[in-house]
Image (cartoon, rainbow, N blue to C red; front, side):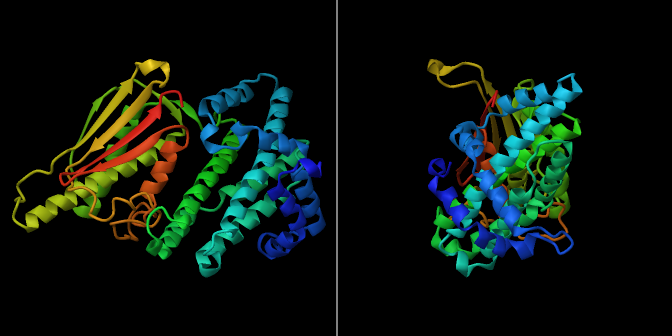
Amino acid sequence: NLCTIPLQYFAYLLSASTLCEIVNPICFPKNRVRDQRSVFEKMKLGFSQSIKNIYNTQKHIHPKSLSPTEILRSSRLIVGEPDKKKREGLLLQDARLLNEALVIRMSRALEMIRHIPQAAESREIQNLVRDHAAWFASVCASPPVVDAASHAAFLSVLSELQHPPGHVILQQFATIGRQFAAEGPHSYVQSSLQSLCRRRMVWQLMVANHVALCNGTSAGVFSDTINPFHVVNACTQSVRCQCAQSLGCSPQFVVTGDTTTSLTHVEPNISFLISELLKNAARATAMHHASLMATHQKSAADPLPPVQVSIMNSLTVPSGYSPPTITVTISDEGGGIPKGLEVTAWDFGSTTATIDPMHEAPIAGFGVGLPLSKLFAEQFGGSLSLKSSPKGCVAVFEHPVKG
């Protein structure tokens, strides 16, 4: 099958022993002796014909083509299977597909990081290479999933992939972004970081979905009953508390629009996105009001202008091409994005906030909220945009109702 393997994966076969030498001291603890030859054999298995089929199946490869509706439907078929033996067989099949897909996705991510021109200059980039090489080797070294025992061993590998705290990885991204900020917005480093984060999001969702199916607690991590109106109302309460605690005051939130429409997505991701936009709007409003008070343009008795949140559902289909879309618009009177930061607002490491170690959110002030929110929005066909003016900022999140 070597003639049918894409060139970049054939290169991995040639350098497999070298890769094992690099990652072996990192990911193979002394109390868990593993044979490098078995890793190499597993890597050859990883580039078999079955993986070639997944490589050619775009819905398993391209992040934008992943449909949460399809994944949710498939997950419900597994969870809803009444025959226990058949359900276990479906889980084993899902584990095999996941194992093969992880090998491809992780190899692509590792290769991309290693080819960043500035990789040799940055300790943080070297740490990313080390971590991803360790995870890649761990997946390659896992035994083929053929029965319950091998499935349990594979689940232990998946737990290792879920172990690194997400905010630690994002802090690395932000540090790298600040190191190479002099290259300007939309640099190769920034595009590489965004591409890597997008790839990590996909395989983390795949892993989390399979683990949730094995636990039997739900039909995976996706939900088709996410009500943006309820999410916004829940987020406004926590954001007001955080803003009042850190700044001493918080604006009111006025939420209007559609109260019934639901969308299909991962609810924690949508909650993070909405919270980030509300937090930025509340913070900008409070700080702009304080600056106006300092210049005697406003008094302490003047109330903070409210943050307006509008939720709209486009039920009409213009020209028969666009699907029904739900739009969440968040408008504030916080003076807009500071001059010079409009073009870097989506870059990792770009922030106007200072890091508060006592804050609840460990990534606050690191410059990861907006870029991560944009990736969450775009993950399944949505979009996130910002429009700034001297009066304030308008954030618009759009997403197809059915994902």
